[in-house]
Length: 579
Ligand code: UDP
Ligand code: MN
Image (cartoon, rainbow, N blue to C red; front, side):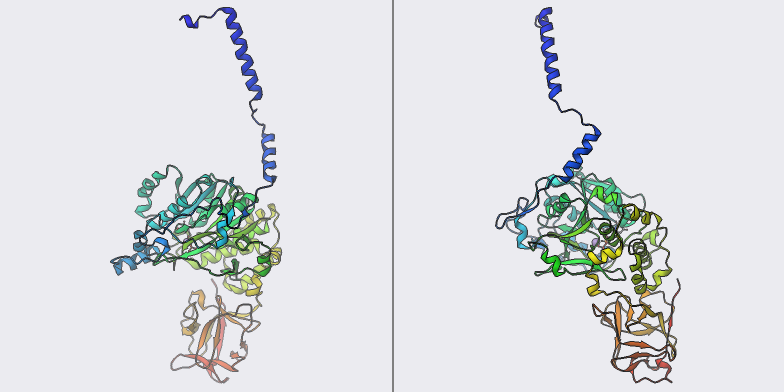
């Protein structure tokens, strides 16, 4: 008690000292910032010169830690192909059907397996800023296999500097497989919140699922991956650095292949050139060597370079910027065309896309889609994807949309739905027109896919001899064109004859000789062809062979033969189709 009894005078003195102390501390303590001040600081920070990545020949980069001293032993280690032991062929066939991937093999390969560092040798010597933005890796999935999904997650956790990896956001797009329910929740608990799982209440498709994942994420950057990837050595800093410098840049890693049967990891491209993403007029995604001028704009081979488009699944973007430009058009269904929507939008509305050679990510290319589109598409892939293309083409491509309709005539009849919001967004963001994009960004599209001349005719091509129609049988050359029933809804029986004599079907062309009529690759960079169709005689004339398209009655075989006006086997009628 004694201790706490102070004389009055003493108490006053002590109080005085305490109050003075508190006031002094309060004076020097940082005051809470007004909103205005905060805003100002944000702007200053935005325009502060940012430290660029620096190349130091021979000096290992600051984030370039070697992953392994020696390649571990084990199935699939080092990215080597693995053949499952005692493989039951029936089981393999069944999992291939279910997943499009040999899950028997995948289940035997370690989730933390090693893969070869396939980067260009310069990549080891880049030094990146230490204060790169925090990142949410967003992985959307629908009925994916267990070990391929988990290997994606493990590779991200193993190969990303933890200070930049805010979280992995998983979005389950209404899967119905048992292992993706409680078992997955239990498994990710070990990651202590670093891996989050969100679930759609109904099937949304990958496009809306990605937007949802971005909305729910907390990182400054969102980075999308498919659910069957493996990220490679030091993949993350090179993707973040360009965004750190300029938050309207979208970055894309170079995608390597992982074999769907053996899980072998191998680069898609080798050698000393770079490729970038473009499109052809049917809106199929294509890649092409980067133009000389783009190559020369850079000092180092391993530096990022501009690309007109991207493949779709794998890229990083500032989260706020992604949401500001409207994320993906919510009217796009399930799968397809979203890569173009985002590419056109970014470039036309003032942003840019770069591919980053020092960031490599492996992706398992499946031979087919192992899922249906559910109710969203009544299980019809073709029209859904074309509907998506139509939305993108109508909103972004201005007068260039005509080339799409020339290449896909049926699309003119499809209903792409309400586009008013997308058109308003384009206006609000004050985006440039497609002509600007073609001239300044995607000029190399025209090297391989020149503007298309008008179609003289399109539709099914019916023989007046047998009333059957031309059928290319396959969409992949080499294939011999044959005859089958007309009125098929298969779009690969829709032919187009253009003003320059090219007879096309899908992205392929038709040629022929005295033995066969064949499906061939159209010659890149050209739009002309050997065919002439006479509206009066209904005959198809091949200018080089100086013969006519001929169907033999007996064996229903097609070839070129001397022209003969009285032979019905040489008479053909185009019929346009209606939806
Ligand atoms: N996906 C999804 N919902 C769908 C279709 C696909 O969440 O309706 C996921 C799928 O699991 C994968 C990603 O979206 O993680 C990309 O799909 P996919 O790999 O089939 O596309 P591809 O690589 O063939 O273009
Ligand atoms: Mn994929």
